[in-house]
Length: 119
Image: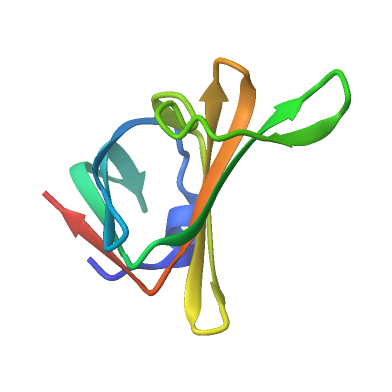
């Protein structure tokens, strides 16, 4: 399936996911179920080559600000609730949101190429 930023951003995100591979060369994210244009897809992978500048932050309601954190094991909890992608200088900027135990969290990185594969 072609990677269409607008369609993926417009999906109703509330899907279980897991990170299958995470290295300097590749991040592979397994999305268990997603509905795109009214069609349900299961076991979809998002393969992101040459990931870099990884970051994570959670929203602290008390001080009304984003707090950086390095808990890259839990990332954003076990569900993706929001997704953003945009081209930046020949690369792709990807970010995912979810409900972490600390509060609403975002995780993101840059990638050279993203492949969206239906199982």
